Structures are given as C-alpha cells and as structure tokens.
Length: 421
Image 1 (cartoon, rainbow, N blue to C red):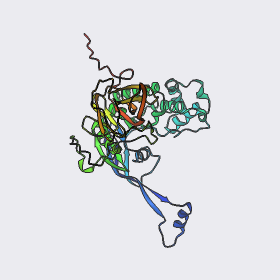
Image 2 (image 1 turned 135 degrees about the vertical axis):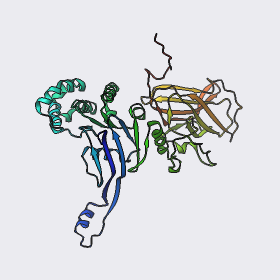
Image 3 (image 1 turned 60 degrees about the horizontal axis):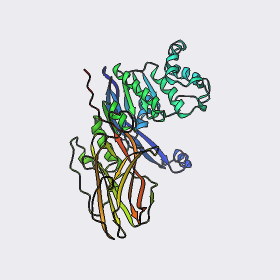
Image 4 (image 1 turned 180 degrees about the vertical axis):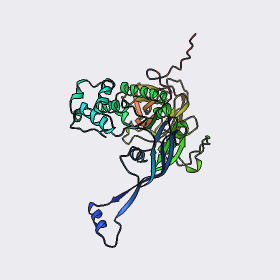
C-alpha cells in the first residue's frame, strides 16, 4: 500500500427517500417496522485504486454519483458500506462554499481552513503571501466572503487548497466558474503538482481537461463504476452514454461497426438537442432531420479535434423551389460565427427540387476548431424574384463539443509544423 494514495473498496451509499416528511416519523414509531421509504443508491459497490503521482479523472452524466464519491473520500460523508483508505494529506476543493464561513472575511477563512487542516498560525503566516498572490483578489480579502462573486470565491478557495502542501489534491468541477486566465493558471499548477509526484483527483465535465491531464479515468453511471481505463477509451464510452447509444455488451476497447439507421428512425433522436429551438421560415421546405457524425460513423455531439466529421441534413420540399441554398454555421457560446459554409459558396450543382422531393445534404470536413463548446445552426434558403428568402432555418439546434488535447490561440488551429535548429 506504500505506493497507493487512495483505495476505494466496494463503497455503497444508500439514501432513504420519503414521499412526505411525516413518513419518516411514521416509520420510526411503527411497532410493526412498516417501511415508508424507498432506497436510492447514490453509489453501489464502487472500487478502484489510485497510485501516488497519478492524475485520475472521474466522469459521468449528472446524477452518476461523482460528488458523493468525493465527499466519502474526503470524509464529508460516511459510506453505507465499504471502505476507503487514504495515504497522504488531502486538500479538497468541492462544491462552491464548502469549508468557508460566509460571514468571515477572506483572510479569516484562510486561517480557518488552515487550522482545520492542522496548521498552526505561524505555518499559515508563512504561506499567506503565496495564497494571496495566487488568489489575486486584492482588498476583497478583507471583506466577508458572502459579498464575493463566484469567480472571486473559487480563486481564494483554490489558492488555499494548493498552498497547504497537500499530497493529494481533489477538485470537483469548481474551476468551471473561474475566468479563463485563472483556469489556465490552475491547470499550470496541476502540471507542477504532477512533476512533484503529487496525486490529483479531478471531477470535470470538461472532456478536454480530462483528456489532457488524466493518466486514468473512472466512469460512473447511475452510482456504479461502469468502466476504468485510459482517458480516450473512457471518453468514447461517455459520449455514447450521453446519447443513449452505449450497450454493455459492446464495451470493448476496439472500435465497432456502427449500426445503420433503421427505417423510420431519425438521426436527430441520437443527439442532445437544444430544448428551445428557434425554427422559422416560409414553409416551402422543412429540415426534418439532421446529424453530426464522427469519423467512426457515429451520430454524436462530440467530435475529436483533428478528425474528419460530417454534418448531414434531410430537407423535404413542400413546393417547387429553384436553386435552394443549403447551409450550416457553427457559433461559439457568445454567438460569434466561428465557421460555416453553404452549397452556393461551395459551387455545388444539383437538380432543382419539386414538391414532395427530399434532399439529403452532407458536408464533410476536418475539425480544426479549438476544443470547447459550440452551437450548430442549419438553413435552407434561396432567392425568389431577386429577394433573399428563408425556406426553413433551425437556429442553434444542438451543441457540438470539440475534444482536444492541444489548443492553440484563437478560434482554429493552423496545425503549424515547427522546426527549431
């Protein structure tokens, strides 16, 4: 066990759920021990091991049990059954607000957290300058933390967590609220910790961060450990889970042939769609189906940077249309157009559609956009008597997550070949 930082053995966490508050009292006082609750397994027989110096990611859809597991590892919660062994001093940055008193100033909370970790006042004094420099919140350190923005709060919390000489650092999604410059500084600190041989346990929805920093990934689903292995393999399974395409029988590392879309089945049903779709046009045409397809032929919202992918849409025409233009646009979360094209720009020639005709349009290209989250819009437009006309447009219909191990500057990667002599 000397080379093991954390060992989780058959950990189960069960919560009792009552329909009404009174049912809890009824159950406690019932002489016949009648059961008024249902059992909810937040975790069920989860086991894994983390060696010293490893950076481990934990991923899973919402409700998979990630935060519950971290709370058990850090001692915030007790498991219903099973054991957790920790070999080393833990510093944990869990959900926003954990471990801080909102009425205390930032400075008072630094000393409070340090004391809780077993440091004397003089030891905290020695680390204070480093904490304040990393947090970079200025005079706000003398104000109650209840007045802080979420970004300021996480700056201070992370600065404290990394400056108390932890052997094990645990971070639960908290960095997502910081600005991009602070996030970059935090991830640089992760690199330093890895070089120092410290153990990092990271829970994040950022697949780019998981791919870049984690030596191994544990995938949770509905409280159970679904799989464990290298980041790319686990992310592939996770992507299938997101669109309900994962089959336990198919959980092999090697790629598999993709099943053909069955008759009557729609591509878009396999995507995570925007719940509020802005759809408009004059109804001369209808984009009734669409897909984002990766280089393995899978319909998915996640595309690996540097890979070939397709955007496909099916359009049914309700009237005869002359020279329709089919288009897609990818925008960032701020609404800025990142890229896009259409059949007019690409000089694609095809037969004019008649009423009741269906056209299937496929755009094939390489994904050179930087890793991150984007939104996809689709359109079928044209000109009637010289006037630009929208037949049908679906605005920000679904997200596209670009997964990348390396991001350069700006919107896209020029894929430079660098030579130094």
